[in-house]
Image (cartoon, rainbow, N blue to C red):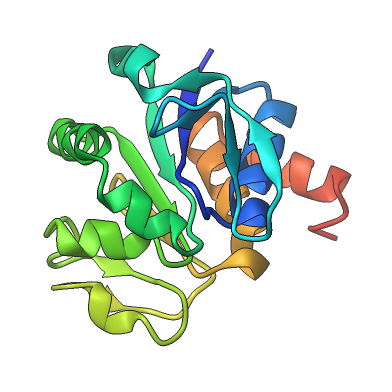
Length: 183
C-alpha cells in the first residue's frame, strides 16, 4: 500500500489539506496527517482544529512514498521554517520521490531551487516565488516527480493527480466520477 505524509503547520488551508487526505484515503492510500511542531491538533487558517496522526518527530520518512504540503497563510511560512521538513523535501527530490504542493506552498519548492527548468503553478499573484520555473496557469502541473497546484478550487484535481501517480489514472478517474467531479 502506498503511503503519503500530509504536513500541517498552524494556519494551513483546511480545504487544500483535507481534500487531499479524504481523496487519497478513499482510493485506499494510507495517509498520515503530520504536525510539524509535534502537536496533537493543528489549527487551520479558518480556525478549524484537526487531529493529527503523528508529529514530525515520529515519522519514518523512508516509509513514505510522497510528501504533500498544503498552502494557506501562515501555514506555508510555518512549513518552510521547519528544518526537518525542508531536509526531507530535498531528500525526496534528490531521490526522485514524489513531492507536491498546492496554493502558496509551491513557493517552498521555488525558494529551495527545486523548480529550475520545470513547469509549475501557484496561487495567483505569487508567481515570482516559483524561482527558475516556467510558470503555467493550469489547475495542476506535474513536472517529473514534482506536482504543483493553484489553490482551494483546484484541490480535487490535485488529489486526483496524486492518485494517478500512486495508483493509476483509471482509479483517479473512477473516483472523480464517483464524487461527481468528472462527468
